Length: 115
Length: 113
Image 1 (cartoon, rainbow over the protein chains, first blue to last red):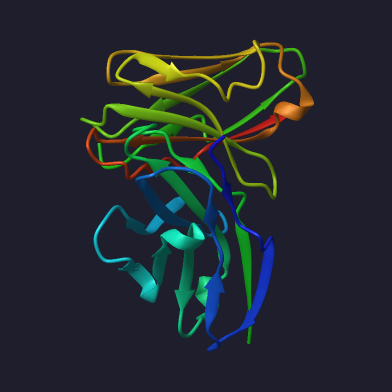
Image 2 (cartoon, each protein chain N blue to C red):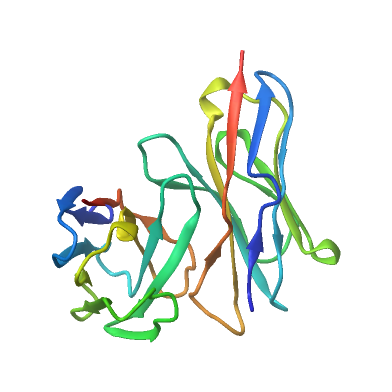
């Protein structure tokens, strides 16, 4: 069965430090992948997405993610975290060939930022 | 419209009552999704519509849950005989055919007492 895992339930980083949130997907010869952010009291916002082409994807708010097929991973990174980045982050994946339009979300990683 | 809208934004109900949650997708978006998010947890897929047909109902937790959609427009998620474990935020998202990016509504926060 298709699944998306985010091994880290909660991460705490200091403001200005670098960040990497992990995501692994378990299916799909032709996966497409997303990262969404959910800030407290707000809806889900798309940070970035990967469909094909360059495996390093740039998103909004200074985030980037790298697709690694050999590791079935799509980790999210940011070189310097800001206090406003504290939020819940969700990785999501679908497969263009087998489950067009259906996207599975991971359980989320909660990010706390300390001064 | 400018975005996905959902109503009501909050709903408090008594155990055993039925509730209806509404989702208005972005105009022109053919795909519509319902998710459930329990407090402190991730998104749980419920059902997906392509147009007014539902090719995937695999996420509906029980036969108390049902959903329908009128054409490529409004969708209603109905929960019958609500239970306390149904308390959650119910999120709706829509996407345009050929673009798998989902746009989310603000959610309906359901509390079953």
